[in-house]
Length: 228
Image (cartoon, rainbow, N blue to C red):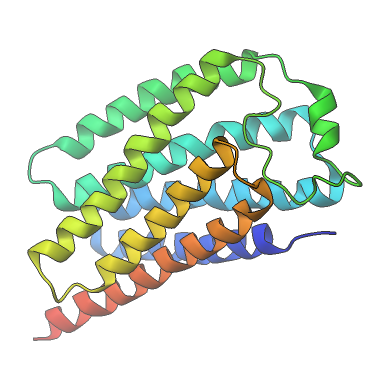
């Protein structure tokens, strides 16, 4: 049975990305551009996950899917630091993300992939729909580097949103952003450490929807403040 949650996630994140690009064109803020890149990666990863349920995984689509997820989360953290930090922490974290992403890219695209597992996660397997994660990657180094990108990025996104609300309690949209980040982070950790991966795409859809709602409310918040 095909799950449409990855397709829904892809559509939401694509709209989210377009709005961020529009905001960047209007305001020229670095965090909008960084988040737009991250959402483009999320759109692609969700679309590849959906296509895997109808067409199955290929070696290339699996490598691309596995590679882009962790840098995507790290870039969300980079954008958060560009928005909130007065010192150039965003630039430092961006350099960290880029360097580690290059290493991760080399590891993922040179690693051996278990084609039998790709077949297990392709239709008409009972594991479809289900998040494949690192199951087919034989490189322990790649599996080690992945959380070095995703975990710090997720924690910065969540912590930054909570910090923003703490600074100004009228920024209630920050709580939606924090909750969206928590849902995304927990869904990844749950799938990685033995939870039922079949629920992964439901949680990621809820997570990106919460992030999107938080962004829309933040845009409205900024608009009303500028009108005063």
